[in-house]
Image (tube, rainbow, N blue to C red; front, side, top):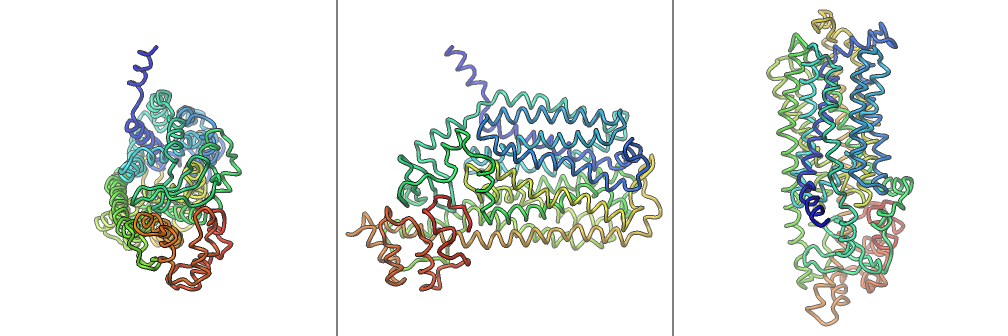
Length: 613
């Protein structure tokens, strides 16, 4: 028996192997998503000849619906799977989902022989359901197991989006124009994914072991440069990132959604969803991601048709190959580059935190609370990167909307797409960092629902409808997939459609700018509390009076009532909302975001530090 256990341990995949599995499965999913836009003319012909839509004149609109149906199934299932991880082994959930995905691909393939658009639509919805099971598990797993290389691994994982989609264009266009047909493309990928579904049953879910270990070690969960956890007796404390000491912050209180609840499945979907929905920054990140995804999905669905309609290519296969290669190269360069920038940014803010807090930990208190130089949190750093890269990408793409030279159009568009692909890992890290650790899987699902409800799902439908009105003849048709000559008279409408698609990115920029603003305010509020705790702990070994003396010195310029409130012993100081309001009134250097004493901090300290008013 012992030998069998040792053999099982040897055969058990390592965390790195599991992360590579997630990257491969994600690649397969995006190849699947690229089949339809890569062979849009064949699917247009199928739609017009199907039993349900025979002779329809709005094939582009139905094509957009077909592409969006995948996202509908994925978004709804993400919510359910995001909560199911509390009650069933994660990798069993992933395995079941991937078998559903394989079955759905077979259904989509059989729809061609049945000449049924409805059957194809059903297959695409079920494919989204299958994908949801591993998407809500993959990113938290990677964040937990990638150490100081989170950006690298998240970048690799999300490189599957542009690379898989581009390969899907090429794969779909090649097989759709061969004897295999697009139906065979779906059937082949179903057979290829089956071994990956079986792989899930070789992975041991280490969540229970990790949970028990983390409880013994304090159950730390990183938040804005300060690690919060639950110790024995459910005392809430923080671990100082400078000195590594545990700093008591409040009397015993059970944090919202702690690991004990999580492991025993006591978190209902409603309770967990309400916890996440109270977080303002989460909403802004999800809505910003929606604006981003609307733009990307619009280009992914109609990109080959745009470059054909503009006269840059004469046949669909050439357009799909070139556009697919453009997106692939942009994604291969941009997405991992953004991940490496995240790792660089995290290393930078760790050094900045050391410079900011080290004097306090060493007993050097200058007599005032500092906020002007508050270091970025991981969340704020990722949001700043996302905002900067999306701004660059949007500016570049707008430069080519009315460009008529083929080489210039494709080159500059490639640069713009590279910049837009770079913040993918940062956007998803922002989602993970905006919620408590135990709620990350459901947050991924809820962000997916919000993102697709306002982005991926309406974008192809809306752009398809606009294109059908402004440039109805700029669609490949016939056995040779050529653009009709009438498209020459609709160039203005086609470029206006392209311009309107690019405008969707402004929604993204506004949302991420607001998210960054509120995240920085949170950084500053937490920095105030942390300076008080670190200075208290640092002076315990340096001067008589220890913590009381530290608080008196660091709050010396704040006035009597505020100083008394902040100088209270940690075991009595359970709320900082009123104290912060008083401090803000007496010191203009302390930030104010419009939240009064009844706000997020005027509650048992850190009962849910992510919750908004």
